[in-house]
Amino acid sequence: MRELKTVLPYFRPYRAPMALGMFLVVLANAFTLVQPYLIKLPIDALTGPAGSDPDAIRGIVVTYAILIVAAAIAGGATRYWMREILNGLSRRIEVDLRNDFVRHLLRLGAGFYSANRTGDLMSLATNDTLAVRQAAGPAVMYTANTVISFVIGLAVMIHISPWLTLAALVPLVALPPLVTWFGKVIHVRFERIQEQFAALSTMVQENLSGVRIVRAYGQEDAQAAEFAALNQGYLQRNMHLAYASGAFHPIMGLLTGAGTVVVLWYGGGQVMAGRIGVGDFVAFSLYLSLLAWPMIALGWVVNLFQRGAASMARLNRIFTIEPEIAAPPAPHRPPGRAAAIEFRDVSFRYPGTDRLVLEDVSFTAEPGRTIAIVGPTASGKSTLVSLIARVYDPTAGDVLLGGVPLPAYDPADIRARIGFAPQDTFLFSARLGRNIALGLPPTAPYDVIKARVRVA
Ligand SMILES: Nc1ncnc2c1ncn2[C@@H]1O[C@H](COP(=O)(O)OP(=O)(O)OP(=O)(O)O)[C@@H](O)[C@H]1O
Ligand SMILES: [Mg+2]
Image (spheres, rainbow, N blue to C red):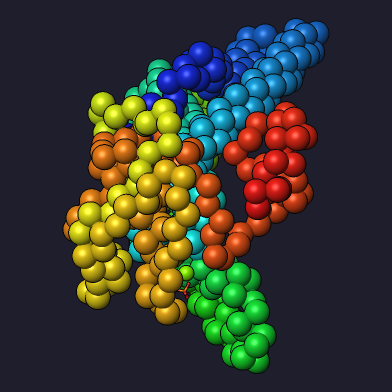
């Protein structure tokens, strides 16, 4: 649950709608919880002396009927508005969170991407941000709703009959341990679903981007079978969760049902003994049934919070990873004119491997000179070039620009000065022109784009 604290800053821009939403929760509950009282009052009146006068009866019934309908309409409208505001707010938080997540991902370097699967990252950006939204929106809303309806409802119930209230609440002592236990079970099962979903999306992503390999080796059926197995596992884990959450509602229903039995039995006795009125008794039963839903919601809310916390923890694991290649606190100004690139005793091994791809490489590329690096396949030519753009930093030695080691510069400054035609091409799903003009503003003049095409 502690993980959810990191969501709090996301609420900050939405403090005003949040406050309005909370006010509407109170208002909606007031309108709902006044209704049993509006039923009790005419019953009290009818069972009193006015009950023998037909005109008075008609007047009372019509008046209260109008009041009850008005309260129901006002309550419904307020509740609608409350959901609009609080759920809308959580969607905006989800958008902000996902933007931050993608912005963070774009800052992370090649090392991060070789250690993390794309499918996992996609499931974080979709499934997990969604779970966080549900904790930030519906879960917060229903918690507030439960607390407020209990405060108002219990106050009125105690006002009607403290003893009856106490009796009706006895079966509810089983509630906290039950909710906690279900919460744990549901949490574990939900985690297993998320894991499976990540595996599933990784499989889809890898098969789509490697579709040519799959075809070339005639692996369509084998891959489809493997996918079907993963998918089946996903179904099973979902069913496993459904068993637990399916049992939860009826058990909560049983508890409230037990409360109702107590009220009928004990409250009925009280009415017969003349200690409480018929109106009180009716209102009391209605209050108890009105409190059933917020109580059931409580269990649901606990597990929304737990899912949200688990998802936020997964997101935070990524958020706390700092890019290994970042600007120093006081970056060196890049040289204004063409400057020499020098490799000084550079050795390099890819992270997570133990073979040196480059070993003690030294050379200087003077401005205006053309240099060709020649070597057999897999001798490290592309690797060497990628060290200039600081895709990676050397394991030993230095790469210098204008006599200054690259880490002293802001990598963005360096990269902005490098033209690079990679061996493996990659096209964004946009028109060719936009691919060529990558990095230029959308309004870049035509001849600038044309100049790029010529360079390419
Ligand atoms: N991301 C990576 N992680 C681990 N090893 C890598 C990675 N990229 C390349 N290598 C390894 O580093 C070595 C050098 O690769 P590199 O691509 O630099 O060679 P190259 O000289 O450009 O080859 P080619 O002529 O095929 O383009 C190879 O053994 C390759 O398998
Ligand atoms: Mg190469």
